[in-house]
Image 1 (cartoon, rainbow, N blue to C red):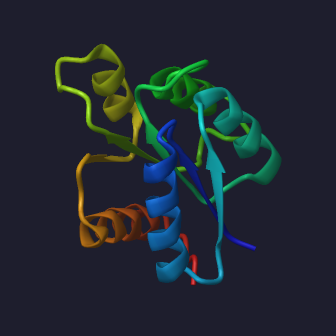
Image 2 (cartoon, rainbow, N blue to C red; image 1 turned 45 degrees about the vertical axis):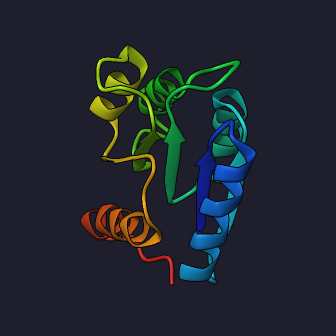
Length: 129
């Protein structure tokens, strides 16, 4: 079964993203983590097809979590979309955007979310339907 992992410390953002993704990809499981450490654990356990990662989070920020995903042979090929409302001069935001496959600045529309996810998945020839 296909899976999408949403990693964001804001519960409302996680829920909205999960709802949009569930409607767009009804056959995929949408997993959620509230910080980078939990996101890493889920990524290793569940091997999602794509990760949507916020930059600024407690315990382990998104940039550090994404770096760890990229350094591990088991997770380095998982596409990452950086989702963040942080300023472009913020090191965490800039760093995450630099190693992600694409980025989606907050706030964004459902259409922008789904176009970005679809674009990244199609570049990797991943099908979630």
